[in-house]
Image (cartoon, rainbow, N blue to C red; front, top):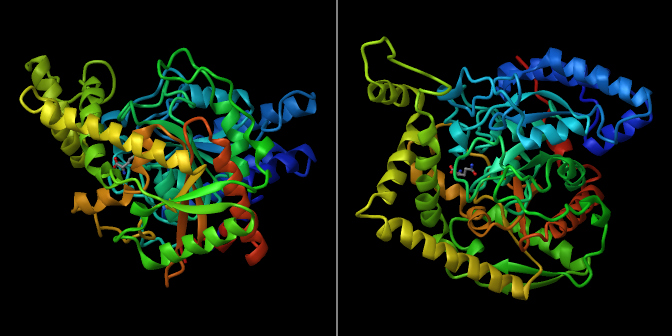
Length: 501
Ligand code: GLN
């Protein structure tokens, strides 16, 4: 048995199809829900499917369109990473701690996309509290990579990436603290965008490391990301780090020429550890960008190799503080509350039972790094190195408009390969973490197959803060080239799932 056919490849096509009345939103939503149901046993991409609510929202979208109301996205289905609060719907963050938590309100991202008329299919699986690079830390079981179900989809937004790659959702929201949008996008052959820090509100997005967390999207193309980003971003007074400036229309500059654009290749991103085939694909792509008028130059960021250790002090430190709110008193899991125990005992038993081992490791690491005797040695030093990394990137952007690198050092790895070796797992994010430390935007574009098993690899584009438009432009140029040389999109190479085969 195979999946029911996917209605269309991209959100842009769905927008056109709905406008031309080729299908209704109800038909579209039903088609995706059928695919979700068929793929779920194999992929486990969803934690919650909100089928009934989705069909009701789709019917309202159809009514709005019939009455001449609504916008281009009215009736387009999509799915949200389960880190975003959704009113009246289970919001678990991939954790046992929140396995019973029904949010009383919508995250700003969710509300924005709802107001734009999009239809939520459900909530997507993820690493617990967004900590992980393989989706193996989810309390709800791992997500499988649709290109090869023996392999991980990447993480922490593995559900989002797998769902879009398997075309069971046309697009998905995601979040990126150290690479969680870009790395799974690369491993699943789809597009991932982490906007400039502050562009997308963190209100209602369950916090991991607040100075690094940023909401974004996983889509099939740069154009789809540009279409969806507008309604989900913008100034939000409920997020104190929200950027107070209008969101440009990234679709308007998508097709701009690359003439005169300078592309920087950061030497340190191409050092050892990079899979030879992934590196070769990047060099091919760079040659294409050059043909389109871009200039290429090598730049050096000597402090970049310190990004991973810096991140693994800063992120755990912030997470140890953020996750203190899961105290068994207000919401979520409560264990051992039989009337005989003190609040401290209940709290301790709940945190013992509710958090998985990766989350506990980070809380312990972070608490240690912030403790009085070690604060300067660890947290203080990490903050100084963070500044050095920011300065390195600023110097690189003085010489280049965008920086291009591989997104991840390898293609998708097998389940169990890295889960018992935290350091090997952490090194997956070597190329993605610097953007979070510096607050700059980053995008991963599918960049061909780089493996004898036919697995996808990704190309990362970085731009200075608030220059996100450059990412969409370079991304769209590369996608156009793919279509030209292959006659199809990267997503069209993804094997169609043979469910139960
Ligand atoms: N993989 C990284 C980690 O485990 C990044 C996660 C993320 O971006 N949320 O922390």
